[in-house]
Image (cartoon, rainbow, N blue to C red; front, side, top):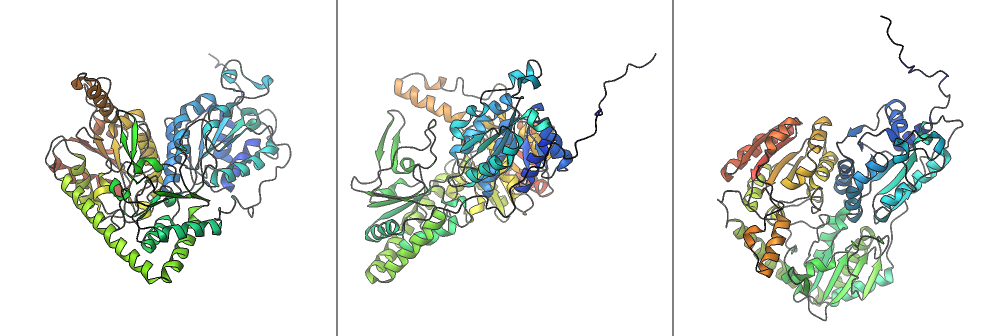
Length: 594
């Protein structure tokens, strides 16, 4: 029987001499040196996909993710760890909507990501029935416009290079954040009929940094040297490589305590002037200097979660000073900009420039006054005593539940550190619910990219952190919460597929315990049954076998482990696998805390 003729797959006319319009977008991705492209496949950018494979020869390489949110979060973690952006591609309307939470968190965490999307043809004649109409929006960028720094959809191919260059500049200008570029499917698939000029390699890709008004900065220096107990409060200073050393120099010059807000690692945890997570340092503060900081209330107030009231730890007459980006680029929708600070002096500047200048101003003033120099020395000694007592207290508290089963978080953190401490280690965003912060010596800026965000972010961001450190001989450890992994378990496949070695140690308390704890608070307030607080919050019955799941995705895995004495051996075996390039997971069953 004669076989039915198949539809022709070869073009009936010659290929265009200049290529395809999507080749221009691919050229720009390569020109701007994006190292990787996390994506979830989608037909709306099939033209660009072909250009990335055949025009660019998959350079930079595409990384397949099981969900657009994971793709965006890999970009988030990568930028959080090293300050550099990835290009991330999402499918049209539905892909963009899948990615929304990842985009939002990247925006509030000030991480640059170059997000590329697509739309069905804006020319109705070019739309396929149903699907292209369902996947075309007017205008698609409105889905994320309130929490990206800029979005744009060029009307033609000649608008692509200019808008691409502008988007990159907007993304990388401080305060940084994601942008969204949307490319019409037919624009991508059309033939290139004439040359399109790309931005020259000599073009500066983002503007210079904000320099401070030195007169205003001098007033801050004067106020600091006059103060008896100034407190320094950085939040995003550590976003640049010099941030930690700049903060150390400033604090040591002034002999002042530092309360790190921890959106990045701004200060070494075991430095004698480090007083993070200790509200008592604000009790006698006469000046508080916030540095690239929005969340000024969290560290400085007692939060009554029942009555939703806040009581300041600092005296009524305490003076506030601020150096940072003030109200540049705040969202008109989400309120991550926090309450307006009561600062008497505000300096608009990038702390990368302002802190070294301020430090020099302080050195000049203190160096000319022996009384000031003596006061700095005495204050530094007093701060060191506070620091040492707090660290000793945490060490003692860690022992309280040492032998419990399920495992306590302090014991888990201690056992992991005992194995990795002689490695060049990095921990991802969840620092064992602060127990790594309290008990480990986090001495280098790259060791921790800053605190965790909401549920459904940890594994994706963790993979981005691991990707940023891949090939540098560093051991990346992820304290992986159970509820979070349930959101995005497909991310495990991406780690194996794209050779992203990481050691995941499960904080598996079989619960969404943060929310459970809130329900306990409400039950105690209302006199209802505390024993019912877990309903709608637990992750047991059935218990999840994360080790089996991980093995199914090609990971090495052990567990579940409930005996704390078994942790170190399992972590050591898993670590050896990670050194061989194999991602590894150790499932540990933990107490209901954090």
